Amino acid sequence: MLLVGAIALPTLPVEQYPDISPVQVVVSANYIGASAQVVEETVTTVLERQINGVKGMKYMSSNSSNDGTCNITVTFDQGYNQDIAAVDVQNRVSLAEPQLPDEVQRTGVSVTKQSSATIVGMGIFSEDGRYDSAFISNYADLYILDTLKRIKGVGNIRVKGS
Image (tube, rainbow, N blue to C red; front, side, top):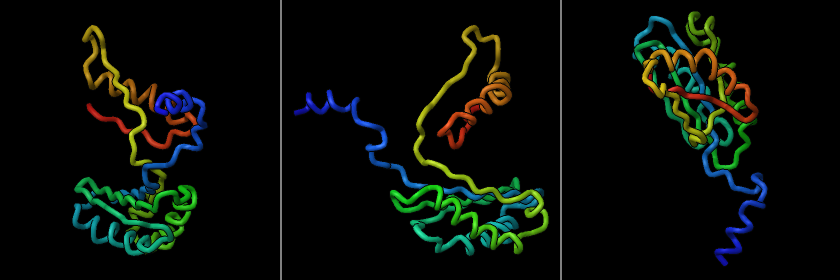
């Protein structure tokens, strides 16, 4: 039985595999020059109040930092349509925007779809040690990341390291 399953596995279409990672939508805002407490009180709380209760939402987590950034991750029920989730959250964010500080309104609030699963990990290094990690990170940022983001199905790329 195990042998038959192993033989049949490569012939199954990917669409038939179940989704195991939850649907997530990330809301990001930037309040330049504000402390974490100010960002929490004037941006994060306002957005959370409006987003809370959106259809299909399972839970929400957020963080506000001293560099003025606010990130809210909204996690939806398993199997919920990611496109609909993003549109629903965007509609709620649009209702909250007039209540946000002018600086935040000028820079905008972004809503992006995200998967909590890491699909691919990649390492870039100099075999002969000629280039340091800062050079390689800068090179990847300038020449590789934008190309990877244009590939169909790629939602987000995170750079770890220098």
